[in-house]
Image 1 (cartoon, rainbow, N blue to C red):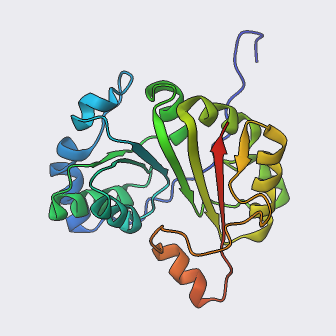
Image 2: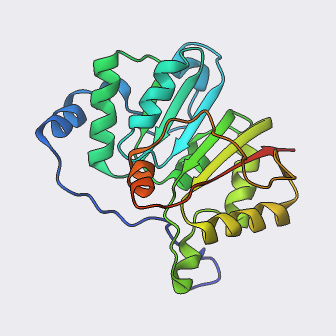
Length: 227
């Protein structure tokens, strides 16, 4: 590596494509031009949605079921979902079309790249990250999405007093996220006494979460605000 070559960034995900259903493949071909965002220059949020409503961004929406519910229940807000796995992208595109939602768009590239290159600073009202890969083996901790560098990035992209909502069913990862946010000092916990959100949140239950509940897994939600 030369002095001018930047270090290769470690990805927080591994592509596990799975098999596309016929409906997912159809949605990717026919509905992506309607609801997908092809990124080649910074996003103009107001032009994209033709309004200036608050913007909610979700990283890693899985099959998109809970994000579809949120967009349907909050037409006064705009939503962008970011997901790299094509079956999930196809599934949410199909849902957007079936529900005729005008306040939900989709990006399908690495979330860090998308935030760095294409989201204006101070543009996001709320960032949602539900059940990211905990990379529970110690040798894989370097792959975790929640780290100090990522917090530096989202601090720039969130609006003043913007919120980040995280959820995990892996307690050690929840403790790791608390530690990273506490050290950063430019976010404050909206539940400083309880640490974790002490009551049911307004987010719909995800398919992944329901599977964990059947297995007896706990869930830890965290809410931080940008200072």
